Image (tube, rainbow, N blue to C red; front, side):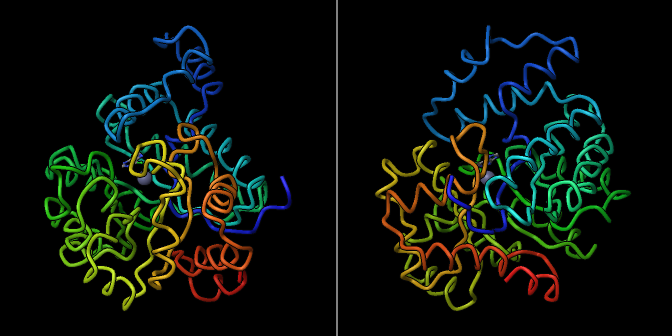
Amino acid sequence: MAAPIPKAELHLHIEGTLEPELAFALAEGNGLTLPFASQDDLRAAYSFQDLQSFLDLYYALMTVLRTEDDFADLADAYLTRAREQGVRHAEIFFDPQAHTARGVPVGTVIRGLARALDAAPEKHGITTRLIMCFLRDHSAGSALRTFEEARPHLERITAIGLDSAEVGNPPAKFREVFELAREAGLKCVAHAGEEGPPANVWEALDVLGVDRVDHGVRSMEDPKLVARLAADQVPLTVCPLSNLRLRVVDRLADHPLPAMLDAGLMVTVNSDDPSYFGGYAEDNFTAVREALGLDEETLRALARNSFQASFLDETTRETYL
Ligand code: ES4
Ligand code: ZN
């Protein structure tokens, strides 16, 4: 790889960085047997029809994560890969309910991740933030209970987010937990307009009051929404290889990224679930350069946007630009 462009990663599910090798090692350490004979067998299952078929495997495989050390190992492995891909700052999602629902306390998850993240500036040259996501296919009550369980750890958390199955689970369902988070001084983001319609992006903005929209690619179907996103320079964390693998687009060459840039949107390029979608941060930059013919100046602008759209304070942000 040529020297990768320094960038921030703003859309990264830590559970989606679980590589087959680590999954088998953690399974063995925890006395579990995976329903795959080998790492190659597991990789062969990474052929997805849509978001749900991916989520089924994603939730199944992450059951190997049990102990604080497991979460620290997962995050440290990601940070090693991220640095090789030019990442200098990472705002990392985690899914507490995917772990608490199977008996792993939220404190175990947060302490494990935080241990690796605390070491990251010195060990990897990467600063980080943590974003706690709620699973939108679980109830609003479950999100509220999870938020209260995480309250003792909120000083570790910068923002809340909303992820998992979008269709049928619109943002407004989670109005209350987003209000509580804002009262607690947290930033807010939500996946919207990935598989779901532009109406979900409107709701994320106007009902949840999000500071960034994750994905948002289907916003391009609604010219009034595009005008709103451009006027307010709402950051959109776009994930090209994810959109390809989950069949949001048929071919990378059809991806709306160039049209989004032409419309004056504040777009960033990110990796989502890199272990599953075939590429980390720089791999996504390379893929869009090759498939969409983006020039060096545009790629630099995307990297600059990634720092601009981050939750770093103004002074720290300046040091990256
Ligand atoms: C996700 Cl690609 C994607 N979309 C929605 N939720 C997710 N959780 C992990 N990856
Ligand atoms: Zn995502």
